[in-house]
Image (cartoon, rainbow, N blue to C red; front, side):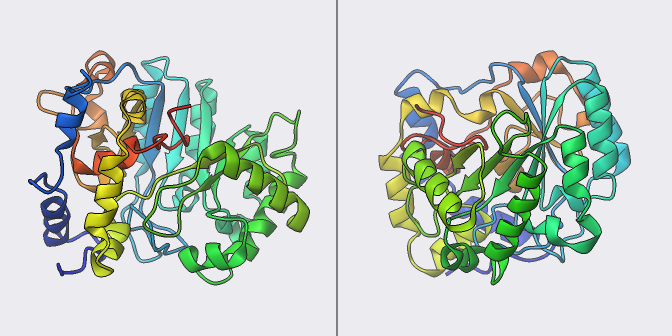
Length: 346
């Protein structure tokens, strides 16, 4: 049993332990070999359709599955100076969408300023919201701000029952989440024809793959309406990635090898061809560049010869970059695939 993978500041020893566990061995087929068997190695970007900004690791929740290892005690946060670098990079391109994530991105003191500047550039904004942040007294006006700037809300809700959600995210989270959805619905979010998009995100509560997105979306839509009279636009299902807290859970419970076997055996080349890193560029809270948010948590920056910081942004080089891959990438390519926008293989 390795030492804990958790801890404020992500100690180097903990990061090294994750990379050791995820290093290819004879036990699992290397991800690059799976790509190569279908002509996809090296995996390369096909453009940048989404610029994803991690505004910090501070969060008002401490979820058991969190791949960011976020929580109330984390202090890493994107500065306004780094945000200005991001805005300059964005302004030099025609990237249409900006994805704001965390932690709880709203806890960044410059969150609203950043949203306004992105909208001034004519780009759409997604806010990856944990919902409960909207119930914190000093953020109770945030739904109106988001609606006023036509921000798409992508909200975490593991399941439509309290016991499942609270087991993963903490006691009382489900009740606050439903209350937050009601606030958003009241402003038009999730309501057909309003133009205000509310998408929900569900991930498994254990070491198994999510069900097909279409079937569970129908369940969520029916049960949330019948039980709580709330609505939403779409549901995204996301596979739990074997990094940080979920990796620790797998190791602690002796399920790591079985879970990885499940991911590897479910590898889908159609999903691999459509993984989000091919059209997304991730910017860490400190401005460093990554192929995806998961590589960011493993400190796997962009490859050799490429810009490593947003201050060095080179749109042409980054739009066709080779992508850094590893064993954890099976999490995005198993079954119907997984991305920040849900399934990738329809």
